[in-house]
Image 1 (tube, helix red, strand yellow):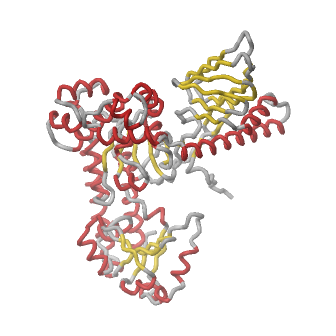
Image 2 (cartoon, helix red, strand yellow):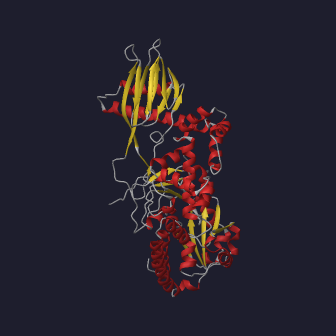
Length: 552
């Protein structure tokens, strides 16, 4: 018997941590100093004595039990105290892809330690030091049991380190620097001096520049220049206007100064920038990734809460997309965008707000273009994305072909027995019941195939068009929605259970509904009918025609 086995972790593909190397550092009179430079993150665990480690312009005192994590490619200098001989373990940490083929829906997640760009210092972490000592002592195992024990020790050490990094991230917010950066991000189009930013942060001008570079990787002037040029790109792509008008909107005195800064940063003039040459883009949430791939542009990065990805027939999904968890800090997200050379970010302000993000915080990495989610339908999404990347002809050809399929499907369905029915789409979620409108499966049923919705739904579609998503109802409201057929979609809860739907199916309003009594209920699979993008809508059209004409 063949079983098509897919790992439960397939949709959330992390690289594997590996211990690249481990060394014991002893200071002596002849060697009191070590230069540290690795192309992977390095963990220094102090086992005894005293030393000073200098990195990124900052010095850290290392004593017994202290631990410091250095980012990849960081250059550090370790100078031991001659009066107190120093001993530490240096562990280089790397990752590798899992040695198996990835399913189409898998995306690469960035690992927290190897994608880290900051120095993390912990003054009292004797447990991590103890792990390091054990790993060094048994670094050349002669038995498999010892080898497995080493793997466990290594990952216990990493778990402890990640937990400490999470706690530090939540508590060590550097509010003064954050305030100055927020001010810069919100007011970059005005004249801002470094002295003013330093005053907001409450530090000296010279120290402010050092702290700013440590936090962002840029000087304050470089950061401001990136914000201005990226905002100029947004305006060039999205809003008509002269170069002089755009220059003044982003904080430059005239178009000549804008052109000089623009060319310094991008290598091209603003008058020639039209988005056509863009190759490396990021999207916030997966639907826009499908739109872009349909247009022939594969996103480099997807920022999302989960790595769930829609599998679509007829569209090859690349395995090179980098998945960045939307729950990461803004510094980690920007680091991933910068590391991957992102040229444009496509996002909906609605989604950014929900995830605690904003164009202001992301703009330093790349221009951020708003593709409004609820304010327009999937066709308008496709057309707007195509306009930004100069592929409108491709979008219009695809839409013309799709509209021919719609017309052919509508003719077939209107000749079937369902043509005279009233169709209601009921979605059962853990938090409540919803009757769907003209989006998701509702688009295909009501727009593509011309089927009749309940009267209240028809009224809302007439008012709101493709912006009408759904109405929240109670079980007792079912009687208010007359329908002869029910399409039912159940969303599982966070542990995968659909038990919450039983309260609906055993209720009197459900049992007494005409569609239920006439056995006109169709249970549909969420993942096949909820995704809202061109390819998914096309697939839903085919499924709906087959469902209503009996050709399943």
